[in-house]
Length: 176
Length: 276
Image 1 (tube, rainbow over the protein chains, first blue to last red):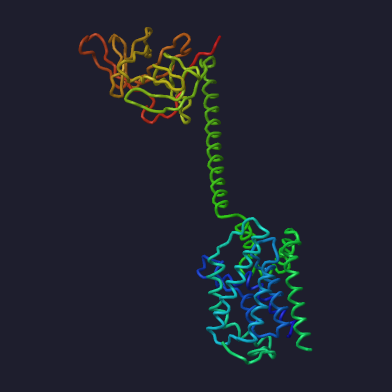
Image 2 (image 1 turned 120 degrees about the horizontal axis):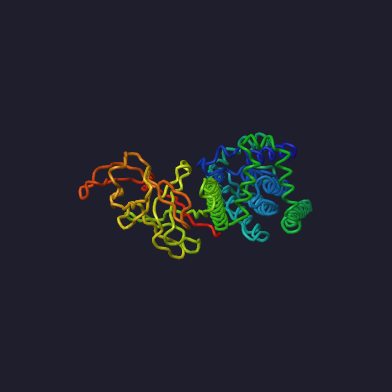
């Protein structure tokens, strides 16, 4: 994998995620409902990169998410673990089922968003007495928004990473 | 063999990543994590601020996320209460300052130096009687004169009535226009005080003034000085009409009205004689 391109991509995504993506907030009065670019990248790399690259990329994306868009300020780790865990899981599953259609990609992004956010909240609860956040937003609206936007970003991200279609390690045992 | 090595490599990568995550979650102090996040925000301040002030947003978000909605609501309520209390205290301070200024100016008037003014708010007005917010505890007593206290017309202080009943914290004041109040008053050119009696219609009358005295509309009527109650005559009313008494044609029937607008009066001062 082209790691330099990956680093630039993650950096740009995290900056966009933290700042510029607010313009995409729906409705504008709810800046918390916006697509999660790092989640979309997680699904992209987990489903298209080699398994070792995918695992590394998942943890790196989790680190970037904890740094730029944490579940709880002054706390890092929940997203590293949740992104790493579910990214690795998706990477393993991608060897048998590989989402390629837009709807399947959208469904995968939605499920990954809900799972990573749910686990992040639970992990954050281990360190903080209260983790106050809009559960419905984190578990439903944001993953849904990401699922709608995400599949359309796969093409430009694939172009940038020079990763078109499935990765070289994929065995064509089945398609979802 | 290669497959097993790859699997080991994957396992090690995954374990390493999880360890890093767990270390960050449980071992790294939250302050250190916070500094790292802050460093990120500081380094990329320029692109972040392009999107609408992310540092500010993240700051706001952090506050919103570290307290529960209930705590947030309670904090907002407490802030509102403090604001209200502060505003009330400021209003009270302004009011106290205003009253001190008024009373200082009032006491500086010739003849009132020895009087001890007790400022009071008008609580209620029923016909020709006022209820004021000072009573026995403040030194108010029956028979004391009550003057108007108007900021704009401090030099035009006038007697408006007499304390008729006193309770612990309140007192009632009979106004000049009360038919049951008989107040000794003086008129320009008269050497002997006369009695002014209220009519109950917003005016009062003075009788038993011989027609040999010239009385004109607009003449001032003074509450006479009374030892221990009022050291100097103070204006109370003005003549509005003067005509021959129908019962005794040799006398004037003088109609007067208070110089102070009793309807809009909100502050008064009870004049208490200072202890010798």
